[in-house]
Amino acid sequence: MSRMPPFDSLYVFSVAARHMSFTAAAAELHRTQSAVSHRIKGLEREVGVLLFRRHIRGLELTRAGEALAHQLNQSIADISRTLSGLDRTEEARRLRVTMLPSVASRWLMPRLPRFYQKHPDIQVQVIADARVVDLRAEDVDLAIRFGTGRYRGYQATLLMKDQILPVCSPQLIAGRAAIDSIESLLELPLLHDSAAEGDRSLSDWRSWLDQLGRRELSSRAGQRFNHAGLAIEAAVHGLGVSIARLSLVADHLSNGTLICPLPFATATAFAYYLVALPEVAALPTTMQFIEWLQSEAKEMESVAAGIQVAEAGLRTLPRSALPAAPASVPNNESLTDG
Image 1: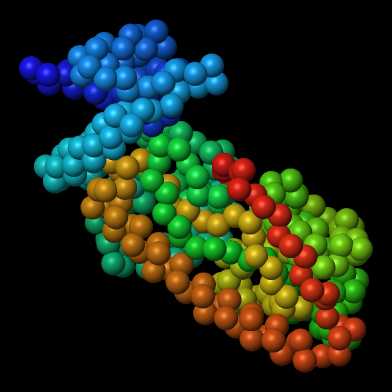
Image 2 (image 1 turned 120 degrees about the vertical axis):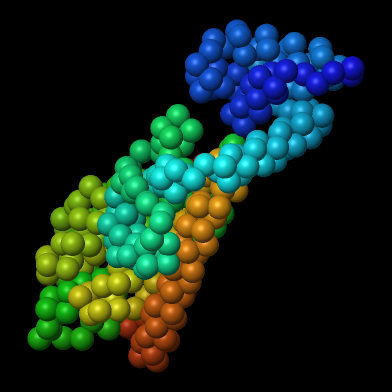
């Protein structure tokens, strides 16, 4: 090549490579699909190599295309860091972060004052939204997603794994006989997060029983709520026992607002991931927030350890009180989001 291709052509290619779709790239760039296709064909002529293989089912990067896309992502991230260094306005110290409403209210908000103590100059705008938003299109810097970790075109970093366990108010079981078996637990009023019953995250009552090898038991009875936070609040107010993700009830368990009447915890199929565009993840403000989130997530380990100790103690009871050997966990590798 005698000269560098136009930067606009390189940027159009990087967007198309991130989406693996000319149509999605056109939507992001506010251009027509035809314009994006022609621009990339022109780039391929200029560089003298094929960057995409066009198939009926979609696009596939060639080896040359993968190499160029990787280098462009790094270069765009470097440019973003440089611009961030030049920009000292309030906007440069603002972060827009999206997550599920339950995660926002039950996990992030109780911890956010500690972040402000360390970084009083960074303003975090929390967007509690059940939708999986397009970060670039909606000008969002970071997402905390409960899913499988495969998010094409984004940088995904594991924040923490999770598990589910039964929780209730201490008053609910005050004066009752000891809850020393799954059968005695299911005699209590049950509370359900209906959103978890169909998302294959293994976060509902049925999944808990299945993993404990007790598929013959029924857990259909009880009140249902359309997201996890409401089911947890119902448990706090003594309406019943809820199956809940440890991440969302760790604070309640620590302060005694909720207790675990039968300390058997099972793993979820999903985990929490920090998801961002590569160029945004490399910015100093984003990196500081991510590092703080990871330090907060480590506190979950001590709470989980306490549950494990309680479970080990319960397993010294007669075998009739214990669940059978855990059933195998379904393979959810085909899932792409949560």
